[in-house]
Length: 113
Length: 118
Image (cartoon, rainbow over all chains, first blue to last red; front, side, top):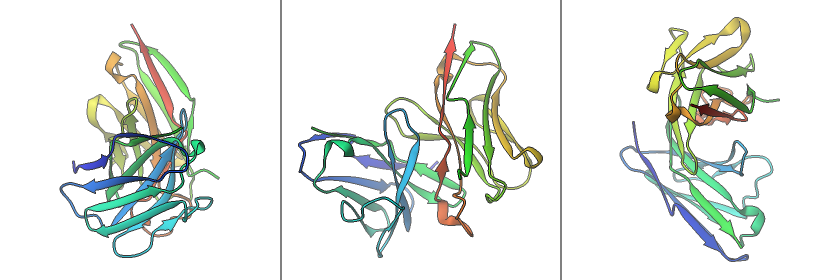
């Protein structure tokens, strides 16, 4: 299957700082990618749809000014958590692919102190 | 309302025993469904998917699932559990408001943690 990478795999930051997470499609072009968040012992929840060359679409309840998404190329989407707080600590996973087959990145563990 | 619902947050089986993980979907969901497996601190790996055609779908690692429209179910099974099957399993499908193709957007069930004991 196709490969999606994420960087970094884990990050620890102080409260109030911003953190950028990269999601790359390594062997396919992704006009659309998705960002999910997974809290401990919970399922994945879709945060937003990242669209190459246009604005992201956010799910209800997700603050677009806090979670900035940029999809500047067909192989890279970035999620920036601005002014992170401890409640933003979570596992962030991206995906890309086709309608009937999404490929998931390995995830990024964010811990905000 | 959920698009997909998994029954049982934890399932425990003996090595060699049948594995049955349950998933039901909303009848308004477009008929394509997935099962993913997640190992601790890792992303998701696709086990199998149903889109169209044969309702009995075979996946990797000996898993299979049957799409039953009459029961709105897509249960995951494996005849004989291995210790390496211990992981969390997610059933997924398009959101209820997906409309057309939804471009790959997925909603996930609550997850089922499978424990395999010797």
